[in-house]
Length: 81
Image (cartoon, rainbow, N blue to C red):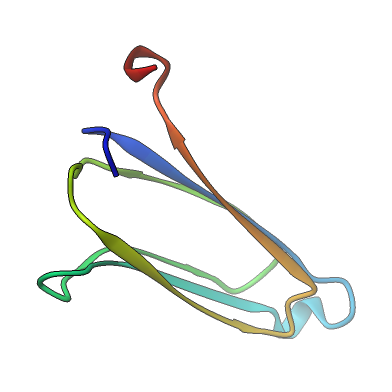
């Protein structure tokens, strides 16, 4: 990511079996394999994680159970635009 501070905005929806809904996400630094940030939601909802690492390569690992849909958006703060 080219920005010093950026945001992972995650939202989850589950209507069929919301009591069993589970969303997991890990942001991993590619070179070291270090988990930089993670999220664990047991019920439908949303979570925002601020990441203060830039100029590195990352990948996401996502796991879901009984989730109808999810959305992860990458955002930056207005002062970096």
